[in-house]
Every structure is written in C-alpha cells, then in structure tokens.
Image (cartoon, rainbow, N blue to C red; front, side):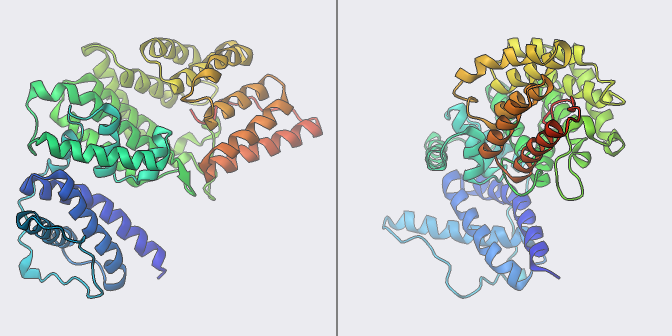
Length: 431
C-alpha cells in the first residue's frame, strides 16, 4: 500500500480531531493561546509518528495526552517565572500508555464554543475570521492569506495578534449568553462561508475540492443551526452550502478537470442535498429579514431546480442578484451580477457592468475578473481579446485545475476561431 493514502487519511483525521482537542484543552486550562500552541505540538508529533508507528487505538486520547503534557510544561515554566527554551521533541517516540487515557470530559459542543470564542468582540472581524479559520477550520496561514488577498507574513502576524487578544480578554471558555451571542453570529457565519468556499474551490494546489473543509463547514453550520433554529440567515447559509455542494460530483471529470455548470451531468447532483437546501431556504425567506445568505441560497436553488442549463430561469436569478447587489458591496457579487445580466440582456450589457470593478482594489487583479471578462468577450464575438484574457487569468490563479481550465478554454477558442467553427456561448463556468 502506498504511503500517500495513509498520510492523507492521517492528515484528515488530525484535521477532524484538532478543534475537538483544542476545545477540551482550552476549556480545562482557560488559556487559548497556550492551548493552541500545545495542540499544534501534539499534531506535529502525531504527523511524525503515526505514519511510522501506526495510528493509536484512541487517537483523540493520544493527542489530548500529549497536548496536556505540553500544557503542564508551560504552566510549570510560568509558575517558576523563568525563561525556558521551547519544548522540542527528541528522537525518542512519545509513548502514551493506555492506562493514562484519562481524557478531560468531552463536550459535544466544544468545537462550537471554540468557534464563538474565536469570534469574540475583542477582535476585529478580519482577525476573528482569520483566527477561526486557523483554529477551527484547519486552514494553513497561506490559505487564509489567499482568502483575504494579503501576503502570508501579514496574515501570520494578524493571527498571532488575535491569539494574544483572546488571551488578554480573559474570555471564559463557555457558550455566550443570548444577548452576547448576537453580535458574534455574523462573524461566525462569514467564517463558515469562507471555510466552505476554500473547500469547494481551493485557492491553490492540484485539486479543485477539499471535501474535508467543505464537509467541516457544513457540519459546523448544522451545529449553529441547531443552536439558533430561528435565525433565518443561519438557515440560509446552511441551505447555500447544501445547494452548492450538491453539484460537487459533477464539477470535475475523470482526470480532475473542471466541468462548467452548463456542461455538467445533472444526474450526478445530490438530490437529497438539493431537497434539504430548498426546504431550508423556502422556510427561511418568509420568516424574517432577508439576508445575503438567503438570497445566495435562493439563486443556487434556481440553478439546482432547472432540468437543464437551457431551462435555467436567468431573469429570476438576475432579479435576486439585483437585490443582493443593493445589499452588499462584495465585488464577487457584482461579478456574478454582471454574468446574470449578460445571460438576460447579452454580453455587452454584462461587460459594461464589469468596468467599475477595474477600480476596485479588492478584485481588479483577481483571476475571476479576467476570466469573466474573457468569457463575455468570447460570447460577444471578440476571440482575440478573450484568448488574451483567458491566458492572463490563468497566470493569476494558484489553483492548478482552474489554470488548466482557463488555458484549455483559450486553446479551444483559438482553434475554433482559426478553423471557422462557431464559438460556444455557454454559461459562466464558475457559477
């Protein structure tokens, strides 16, 4: 058996266990920053030893025991008030006797408590999201930096400052009361939205999906929905995730290549997830103020309920984007609004709406702006300009499947143009 699948399974196991272990250690010791450091050391030790020695019978207990030992060392050093070098694992493997598996009591909501803790009002929204992506979502600092479109060292400093702010705030590791919970919900939902997006379309690397992240985002959102069943935006976000993730099996071919929405085999879509998502958003919309996640879920539902690409109700999608665009200044929403406009009123109308985004620092150099403009130019019958922009978009993405798709699109368009073949006018691939 290859070592790669084993390493992959161990990596996924560690990602699943990390927030559970961190929650238990932080709840016992009430020191988030030190607990996070201790758990990271335990994870490093496991990543080194488990592929060689095998996964222990109680992997969570193993991680807890090692993390608690690290915390004991930290506490002793604090009590002694002396500087110590950071504990470094020696060459002797860590042996945890089965009899020592006296785990702290595990609360099934530890991960959710950790999520709210990371979104404490003492943190700025950007810092809260970054810290939660790191501690709960399991993203690397580089992945988080890509999500925020900032350099990796900047993000590393932001996460470090956020951990220190949580420590200084002396926040208790417990579920906040209802009145304190409300201001954190928006940050929590934004965090889960970003974690899902990173899993559904990875920002870098060889794979389009990281199902561990998207599945974790859905799981955590279900927990929040159970906690706040009357919050319509929580229901909207869960619906959006389910309706989007339902298409995952059809988004890539046998070699991992991207298949755009209008070319997907809809029989591969997860009908149970679609039914659940439609029920959630249908139930949420009449019950309270309509928010961004509900509107995005409604758009996803229109796509998912269409029997074919040609049957898609683009005027309804455009109407929903009109409302959504007035509600938020998110440039990606503006980008999708331009695509929907093009599908209803033609590519020229869509291209006109892209012009203001050239002055938006958040998106002006993003590969999606280049890719959407290329797509609309292709539909408008300007192949040379479209080819140049597809190639430019490919240069700007760190995702190998996206880069390959964009380069292939440019190559096919070049071949069609020079051979005189009519150019496809399919819908935007990223929708």
